Length: 113
Length: 118
Image: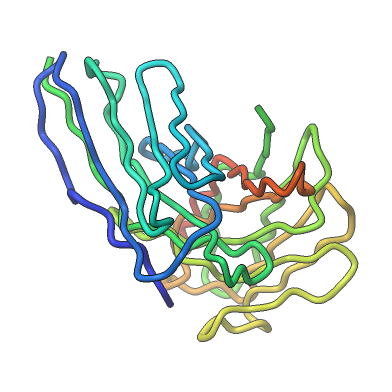
């Protein structure tokens, strides 16, 4: 099925650095969701976006709904070791099929203390 | 935030037995729940959509007789892996979709169930 193009696939950064990841789609989306998944756990919702251009923060995390409605990015500022995990973008396309989310491939983040 | 639980968190079973996994939305009602399967280092793969009071809809390639889904109430969906085989070993995750609030869709995930079939 359709999958969002999420990049980068992995990142190895030093504690304190800022992180940026993004997702793009070939079609228009109505909703963008960003999740974090730690090993052996289910994804946890970080930020939800519903309007083109919307910029939303959750602590050190900031995400934006792209103006074209075909992309979204997530920034993490001043990373800390507990930010380690896999970050997934997910979205609901405008042709929403009963709420089925389309997922990105994930960005695996490693933070060196 | 909304809480979704799964039980059991881990299960080991013998080949040929059936395993039931429960997914509950603890503080909201969910007319729709979703079941996913996840392989290591990969994204989530949707298996089926579970609708309260009606039959589940399965994604292409997912055997409905193999993965039985029941959504008997607005807070509970169950996935039964029938006649499990080692290739069914995986991480199974459910998500629950609350009713729309002002048109704002979201989904909350359970903590996952690790199934190992020997």
